[in-house]
Image (cartoon, rainbow, N blue to C red; front, side, top):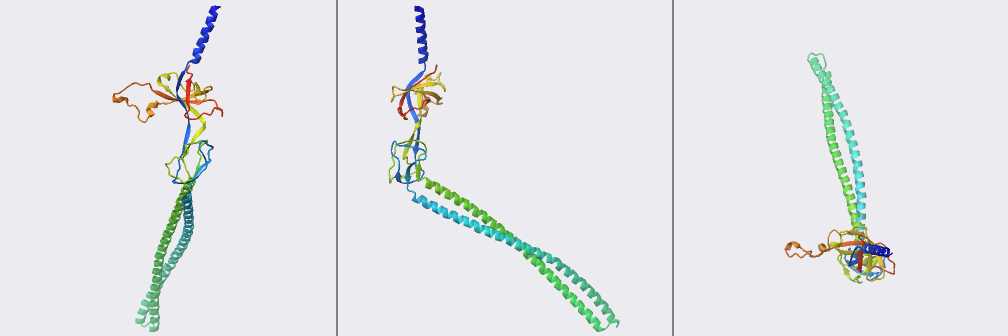
Length: 358
C-alpha cells in the first residue's frame, strides 16, 4: 500500500514538473501600433477637434489648417483647365476648316488637271489646221506662178495660214497657262495639307495642355484636402502638442494615435532559452498592472537578429575588446483572448511571460 502511494506521489511530481517546464522572462512589455499625425502641407492651425486620450475612429477629423491659399490655387487651376479645354475646341474647329480647305483645293486641282487634256487636244488640232493651211499655201503659190490661180485665191490661202499659225500660238499659250495653273494648284494642295497637319498638331498640343491642366487641378485639390487632417486608424489620441494659431510644416508631429484594439507582447528571451522555442507554442502572460489575471497567448515569430543589433551603436567585437555577453532575441507573442474593459491593455506595460516549450 505504501508503494502505491509513493508511485502516485512520484507521478504527480512528474506531471507537475512537466506542466511547469518552459522558458520565462520579465524582460517583456506590451506593444501596439502608434500612428504619428504629421501634416502634409505647411499652414496655420485654425481648429482642433480632439483632446488627449480621446478615442477616435478612422476618418474622424482631428484638426483643420488654414486653406485660403490652397483654395485659391484650386480656383486658378480650374480657370487654366477651362482655358485649355476652350483651346481644344478652337484647334478642332481650325483643323476641320483646314480639312475642308484641303478637299476644296484638291478638287480644284483635279479640275485644272482635267482641263489640260482639252488644251493639249486644242494644240494638236491647231497644228493639224496649220499643216493643212501651209500645204494649201504652197500649192496656191505654185498655181499662182503658173497663172492657174488668182491673186485673190492666193491671198485667202495666205490669210488662212496666218490665222492657223495664230490659232496654234493661242492654243499653245492656253496649254502653257494651264500647266502653270496645275503647278500652282499642286502648291496650293501641298500648302493646304501642311496647314492641315499643323492644325492637327495644334489639336494634339491643346489636348496635352488639357491633361496637364487636369493634373495640376488634381494636385491642387489634393493639397487642399490635406488642410483637413483625418484619423488614419482607430485608436486613442496621445501626445497632442498642436495649438490653434500654430504654424506647422510637413515635419511637425502634431499628435499620435495609439491602437487600443490590437496589442501584443515583445519578450526579450536570452539566446540560451531559444533552443526549444518556436512559433505556435502557447504562452502565459502576467501584466504587472493586473497581478491576479493571467492572459494566454501564442508565439507568433522570433526575430532574426538580437536586440543589440538594432541599437544605435551596435557592439563591434572585432575591436579586440570582446566581452561575451548573453544576447537577447525579441519574440513576438500574440494575446489570444480579447481583453475586456476591466483589463485594458496599453502599449508599454511591463509583463512577465512564460512560453510552454515542452
